[in-house]
Image (cartoon, rainbow, N blue to C red):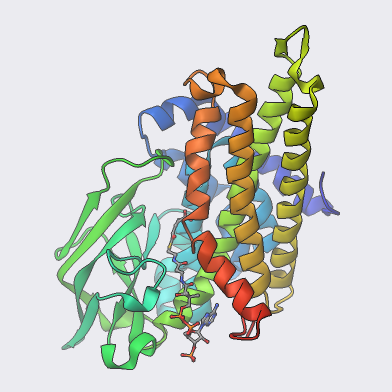
Length: 384
Ligand code: GRA
């Protein structure tokens, strides 16, 4: 099933698989049921270098590359989809710092985020600005030696547990998207309130919340890049987190396929294993092909990133297809398991609930299709 992975990547895959199976799997059902965020597991992932794989060694990373990021995230997503969100919460801010921040900001935050000494998050989305990032209203106004933030963010993963947030806000609304800036904001601090989003369909063990900024002071040095760089930073960063998100989706699709194969070989109806029925075989075949195709799309996008070649189009294709693949696989698994899949005795209902997030987060399926189709039609270049 693997595609020409070298010894280093195979060793990373083995380490991630072992971690997921030994340390995450034993409590996954309980963690999900109790909506329990496992900070200890996130910290262990940090120690194992899972977040540092796309960060150079001088900033505390391992620099094993984007293909390794895909491999690690797939293994985590296969065992607990909620936990793969933690990968994006660390790599997103870490890469934004690496690509755009001053040396001072890098020194202060980068290695601590890469090894999860600090839990981080990024805050783009607002009540009226989801797909339309430039519609955000949060403002950062200059004030003496720094800025004052006012506004609110919603659907922010890690909002209530993060030690630091990468926050996007308008410094100059007149300039439209070119007036957005990015800031590193320490949490908690006066002027910021974090509130959990009470309940959601899935990803139960991944905290999601709102952030309210009420005259929150941010020092000038915490501006990432220059004023007005925010939209570019945001889009560049989403191009990393979309890859890892897609890898989590493939991990979940694989879990669905593995569970389905096992059950189809064990469940007997009308005197034979249900796997012997062609209608079940139809689903197994499609699950397998889609999973492989999605993984290959992810590997291609990751390899392009490792080579420093343009890859926005390829990343959107991979993220879109991986999200559809997870949803399809969970759908099939539920059909194959029937009533048992609908019960809480098997993980299928969790897979089903978690699978839906992949068509929504990190740029919805429709946003990815818009990027892909507008490139094909010549309306807007995806790779620039
Ligand atoms: O002309 P210019 O110099 O001003 O630049 C334009 C363009 O070149 C400008 O932005 C630049 N740009 C980029 N730069 C670098 C655009 N895309 C990129 C890029 N990939 N890299 C404006 O561009 P535009 O295309 O005219 O902007 P637009 O039409 O306003 O928006 C584009 C688009 C719809 C694609 C964008 O808004 C978008 O991606 N929306 C989706 C938002 C999203 O993905 N949100 C994710 C929220 S975070 C999340 O889900 C976390 C979940 C956690 C988890 O589970 O992992």
